[in-house]
Amino acid sequence: HCKGEESPMSTQANQQATPREDGIPIANCFTVLTAGKMQSGVACVYAVYSQHSGAGGAFFIQIDPKTGATRRWDAARNTDDSRVILWSERQQTLFIIMARGATSPSILMSYNARNDTFTDLGTLDGNRMLSGLDMQEGTDGSIWIGAYGTPCELFRYFPDDGKTQGYGQVDPDEHYAY
Image (cartoon, rainbow, N blue to C red; front, top):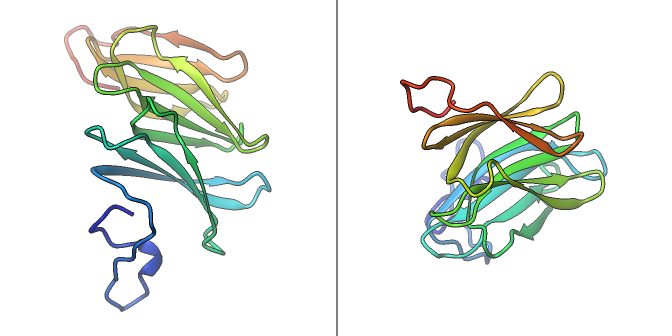
């Protein structure tokens, strides 16, 4: 947890939450949570912690809600921001949009729980400065990504072949992420 924040693990019903020190220094953090599954198929929670302002790289934690056991992975040192994650039940994969600093394009990464591997799936659109802001899984298993940039655009990632299709700016008069 971030310094000064209360740990959800120390909160009990009808009691005052007490911050606890977990020994992981974090500065200027942003946390995103989603439900998923571990390699064994047991339900878990994935947390992605981002550290801003040069505080260091992002890291991922897999939490077993029954036992409280955690597993941690550090993201590559050149990735420091993640605010969008999506668990795909169909793929048994956690999709993550990461940034390589404030002036670099977002990249799409995945963690495959079946084979316990992280994969850099590349940028959304070459070296263009785009920040992924939302992801949703389509009924066909493709991943739809709304990105903010100039202009804001919609993308679709196809896990089966690893290709990304851009749909361009949806509305030429509006500059909002989709």
